[in-house]
Picture 1: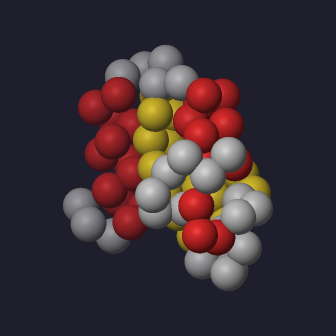
Picture 2: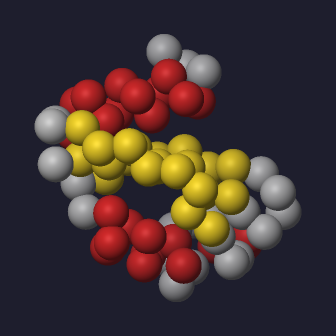
Length: 68
């Protein structure tokens, strides 16, 4: 199972990502181990959507980012 998710950063902006391990990925964001979000801690998980495959989750990520 794969997940597409939206985080709200401390500066009010949003981060959209996808992963096959949501708990690990969220922990990485919250611990500042992601180069895109570490400057804007804390992060808050606003939304998550699950998909059968990582490819489907990636397509949804790009749709939410307006790139697909």
